[in-house]
Image (cartoon, rainbow, N blue to C red; front, side, top):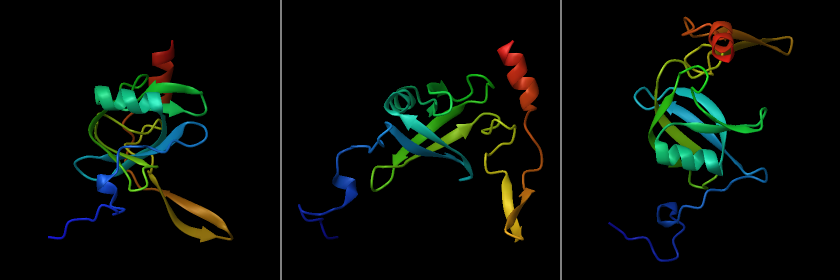
Amino acid sequence: MNEPSPNSTDSASQPFTPKFDAAGLIPAIVQDASSGEVLMFAWMNREAFELTASTRLAHYYSRSRGKLWKKGETSGHTQEVESLRIDCDQDVLLLRVKQHGAACHTGYRSCFYREIVAIDNSVPILHVCEKEKFFDPAEVYNLRQS
């Protein structure tokens, strides 16, 4: 087997230097560790990354609320992180998780529960491809907030 040269651009030998954007965020793709199903996409700031890495529970940064959040803090549907990876350019994270309940705030297991099946007069036609919701968002979020 050939050894990489000292001048190699092999990213395996590079130090961990995640590239957060100008807003201090890095994209995170979340995947079910056992099935490989993509569950969601979210953003992390450095604090969310560090909490996720240290607790092995997924934490994210909400751009709309402008704050850190622990996945499942309201719904109870948490994500245990089994593997935390970074891509070759160190600008995207991949979390492989054990999902407890639904990943999507709409009640579906995955945030990618709709498929674009056709385009009619420049309007995409969506089909819900998940059979059922895990929970009713109105019930869960109203109960948790009162």
